Length: 336
Ligand SMILES: Nc1ncnc2c1ncn2[C@@H]1O[C@H](COP(=O)(O)OP(=O)(O)O)[C@@H](O)[C@H]1O
Ligand SMILES: [Mg+2]
Image 1: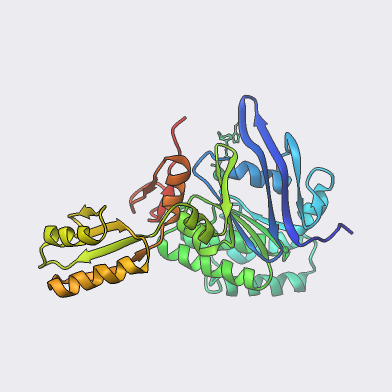
Image 2 (image 1 turned 90 degrees about the vertical axis):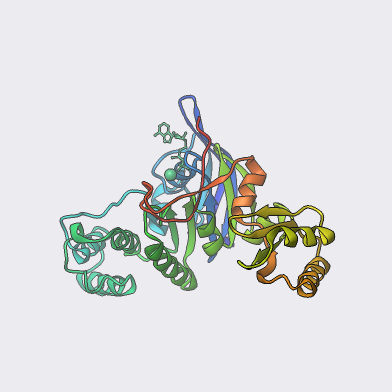
């Protein structure tokens, strides 16, 4: 038996070169059993290569990783027995039904017929595919396919699950549905490593986040720690339609000096020094009679974190972009 530690996954100084390209550059981290790690980074950061090394699909140039105590270099079979993987591209057979895909995988794992049937029914139910289970996958929507992909990787009930960009290309609703399924898995004890370009996704799902860029770890911590590191909270005031925006800005400047005015959004933003500022600003507007739609403190987003760390912005994707309209904030890589 492999040694069981408190970590279900450990990356130990992983390096991967492709000729001149250093895809992964001395990456180490640990994922405690039962927790979720978000490996966050823009396109080309080295996320897929890291996952491929940890799931024995490609050999590290140097360094190694442990999955459920098994070494990916010395005991790849042990690693494969302990994990499931859902890759970036679909692995299911389009010409088979959802149920047939699940059964096929169960048979490949050598499970007996009755177990396979029970697990397939259970997974179809759990992933809201029960009604579509006997339709060929070709007729499935993008969200249904992703859910089936995930279901297929769970047939062998692995304690450790790797998901490479599980929701890229999904519409917002399917994304939220998949998040719910993932939360359920984690509640049942699965250890999860997921890669994502979506700041919001890491924030929603991960206990810990490792931010990678150009193959290197540039930051790590809980979502809260990363946000704290990136700077102060901002005081944000939204001025009602009928009210005088420039007068509002002038009043706010008497309390907090640096006020940024967004005319289109009718929003005034200023770095907040503390609760005192909020109370004072609120009081100023109350006595001046200027009507506000909203007043509050805004914590920095993970977008701000990335900007702070790299000097690059995360871009807003729109619904008609090629990623299928996930509609969230996505990290933008620098062109090489
Ligand atoms: N098989 C390969 N051969 C050559 N270069 C590769 C290969 N796979 C990945 N790379 C390069 O390694 C870097 C990291 O890629 P990847 O791990 O796919 O990043 P991500 O998944 O974060 O988008 C990129 O520069 C990519 O072009
Ligand atoms: Mg990738």
